[in-house]
Image (tube, rainbow, N blue to C red; front, side, top):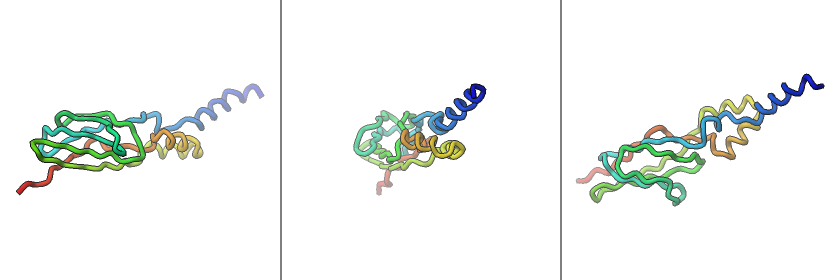
Length: 126
């Protein structure tokens, strides 16, 4: 019985580990705007997440299943963008663990991800 202890502990560790959480629980997103140099506020569910003083700039945003809302302003003009999170491809590795890793990733929102960069365009002025 003793010779099975190490493999059992290793198998349990693998089953309880989560693949997507190993990549972290936040994403770095570069916010660009047209026109460049805009100030942007990033919110999630009406709660502030980050402020960008001048685009383009990268910010670290904690993953969530809820979208982020980006509002940018420059010289009296404004542009808005809502970004819904996608699926973190590493979450598919959780299927190898029989579902338990996916549950952990889901609770941590590690199964979600934001794009590497986004572009907020201002409406055309006539």
